[in-house]
Structures are given as C-alpha cells and as structure tokens.
Image 1 (cartoon, rainbow, N blue to C red):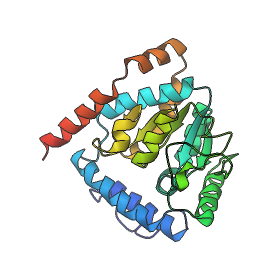
Image 2 (cartoon, rainbow, N blue to C red):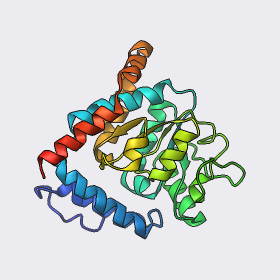
Image 3 (tube, rainbow, N blue to C red):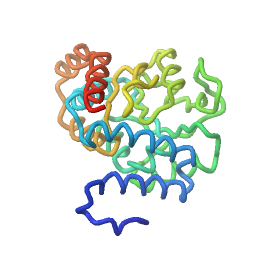
Length: 245
C-alpha cells in the first residue's frame, strides 16, 4: 500500500493508513473523488474525539447491534468509502447479524457499483445485492433511490455507515429503522437515524462484530432498544467535542 512506510510509532499511524485506503479506493475504482472530501471532513471531527472511541459510541454500538439482531430483514448498505475502509469488517458484520449486503452509491456509475461488489466478494461475502431499476425508495430523487427488491426495499432495519443525510431521512420516511456511523453529531444523518454511532468506522466495526456475536439474549436485546435515547447520545457527543474547542 502506498504510504506503508509510515512507522508504527507515528502518533497518527491508524489515521494515515485509513487515508491511504481511501486513496487506494479511488485508484481501484471503488471510491469517488468526492469521497476524499467527505473522509477529510470526518477526520476533522475525529480529532475532537481524540481519535478514540468514547462511551456514547459504545452504547450506540450495543443498541445498533441489538436492532440488527432483532430485525426480520436487516440489510447493510455499502458505499465507496465504507467499502474502501472496511470491506472485510462489513462482511463479518453481515455474517454475525444475518444481514444482507447491498451496494448503494450517490454518484451514478455502474462500473463503481461492480467494483464495490467485487471487493466485497473478494473480502468473503457469498452474496452482494445490486441496485435494481425496478424498485425505488420514495421521498428521494437521485440515484440512491434505486434499491434491490430483496434488500433495502424490504429491509426493516438498515445499517448505512457514512450516509447522505437526505437518504437517511428518506429511509426513515419509508418506515425503516436506521443505524449509522457518523463522526459529526450535528449532521442530518446523525439526527435522523434511529441509532447513531459517533465514531470512526474502522474503530467501531470490530466492536460491532464482537458484540453481535456475544448478544444472544432476546430480552436483553429488546431492553437495549427500548432504553436507547439517540438525542441524548448525540448531545453527549456534541458536549464532549465542545469542551475541546
């Protein structure tokens, strides 16, 4: 990987390696150039977290896993940035929760959709659903409305990391519960989602996989869902960041 000569002792080694994955994603046709901008914006918020997973994120990981594990038809929506950063972890989470994987991107490109599908299959997925031109979400007008009839279209719970705000709002308006990962607690995505994990995707996904494998008590899972207060978690994240500015 370019940049792999960065020493492990570098104080921002993990962040720099994530940046290299995004760049490599562009070179592989997985990530759009616009995704580079989005990743940089997320890095800025991660600075305010001290590039560490905080307590409000840990609670969200549990609640998000509980939603996926109790869903009748959970689906993980994968865009270019998510695939470039964490294809293997997304595949593992799908296996741990019984969720389907579905490709969904903003900037229209059949080639990029296919590149993401190939990357997920190479990472160990047995099936990756692709957008259909026969089924569309309501309340959204651009390319991301197109979904697979057996995937996001049917989903009762969707995990949509690194999501666009308008699509997150549309998923909610279509009657779905949404779990997302967003480093900005003030974004439309963060505020519209059912459960928002304010954390770096590459840090929280391994925790999600671990929790999904350990949480098997249906009563406990339901209790986590009922007790979850997304607004309070976002307020805690915002308060934490403001103390540092």
